[in-house]
Amino acid sequence: MLHSLSMNDRSLKNSRSFLPLLILVSVTIISLAPFAAKAFNIDEPLFIWVAKHIQSHPLDFYGFRINWYGTDMDAARIIKNPPLVSYYIALVAAFSGWNELHLHLAFLFPAVAAVLGTYFLASEFTKNPLMATLIGILNPVFILSSTTVMCDTMMLAFYVWSVYFWVRGTKDGSCRNLFIAAMLVVLCSLTKYFGLSLIPLLFLYTLVAGEGRRQQALFLLIPIAILCLYQWETYVIYGRGLLSDAASYASKEKALDIAAIFPNLVTGLSFTGGCLISTLFLVPLLWNKRIVLAATILIPMAAFGLSRINFSHLPETPWWGYYLQLSIFVAAGVNILVLAGHELWQRRAPDTMLLVLWVMGTFVFAAMVNWSVNGRSILPMAPAVGIVVMRFLENNKEKFWQPGFKQMVIPLSCAWLVCMLVTWADYSLAETARNAAREIGRTYGGSAEPPWFQGHWGFQYYMEQNGGIAYDRLKSTIQPGDVMVMPENSSNAFPEIMAQGVTLHVMEFAPLSFLTTMNYNAGAGYYSSAFGPIPFLVDKSLEERYHVVSFPPSQQPTRVMKP
Image 1 (cartoon, one colour):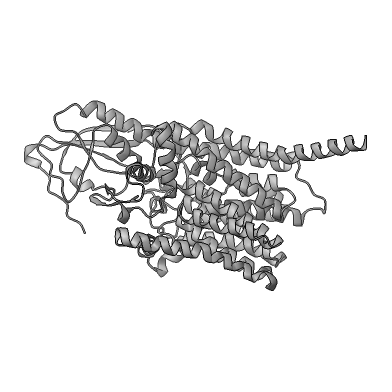
Image 2 (cartoon, rainbow, N blue to C red):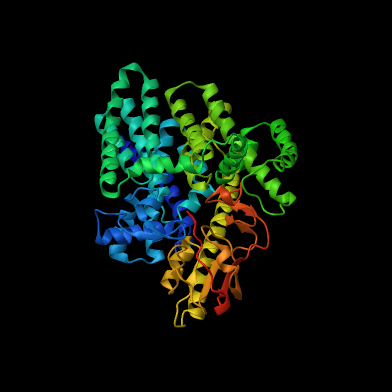
């Protein structure tokens, strides 16, 4: 009988430990599955083209040319991410083809891996790892990033698992765990170069963990050696070490400008708060009523102050609602950094140093170092923010505090709803490019000369599928009667060429009517703050326009020669 009771207790314990994992996997799949047929968008074509090249030249991943900046260039000069995720795409496509649905379904695995890694890491730091994980993942930056076939979510999966195994290895002295963590650092860095930040992060954590553990930092020589080899090999193959090339690109694109420091910091706060919006809905639980009331009063006042900042780009006629949304996101970003600072103030333990350096380091990189502020650069801090928030709640509530239904489920449900709306907005935006390319192909693709197009991202991918030719500002010669198409909401395009033609048609395609993630005219730029200091925006009149022109004999355009 005692044996039976022992077995029942063990079974109950196992079921309880399995239930949070089941909840997390279910939430992840339910959140991502509706977007599995999403059109490729932004930089996704780059990863797909690399994958296609890998299938025929597996050791020469960047040995081809792309017209991405308006003229044909070596892929090694254009692509600033390592190739590991493209190898994954190439492997999946070898069995399932290049269908959007199949590739997106394959990327459910990195998303689930990132979620589970966050849970196990949170188990090391909090009493409520399930809630800590939900706070980390129920954010637009995680859900949206996980609906792409870019490198970000896979990088995050390697990142959190590397930290987990390193923390475990440091605590129990397991060389096996430390070796696994070191190899995961390599995989993370070869997925996205931000993974290199693991080396100083884990090194500093080991130093503060105690003198008896400092020799464990020697395991970090493994990723250093392998990545140095990668740098040397890519230099031999492509004439440039791709690690140093990516670093120099970021520094050149964001050269030191004293006047831009404050706008960049504010933009970084806006993206941090908007992309990690779950913390905003938890504010009533995190702070007392006086602080919440004061913040509610100050946010509209701050909106007025933000309207005086010289951001790199704003809508031509920004309305009061724009600055109010910006102010809310900035306040949410400040809240996250304050929570991290409070964590450091309350505890000086190695775990605290790890989490705070993780959050603060990611913020500094995203706001001040990277070529532009964007949601993809904010993503790495999501797991750490979830853990920091839960540690704050556990430390400042009653000794045996447990999150209740109303306390946590309602705010997290609100956060999930925002995630789904933002991801839906990005889904519908990507869909407009695919629909536009198909419509243009049907309308103008049957002529003797295929239509030229400008603009890149997903539009380029689908235009080439539908017979369009990318205009090369150095090589292309436009003949009388040729047709050219250019999206209004794009980058690396040359409207002065379009101005020499005669307008045939302005096509309009409607994404989500009240919310956008990337609209230059509206001033929203989830993928780049060059489009605005806010990651997503509630607004109206967000139609995507595609201008179609023809060049009559008397108005044959000249080439635009730019360095």
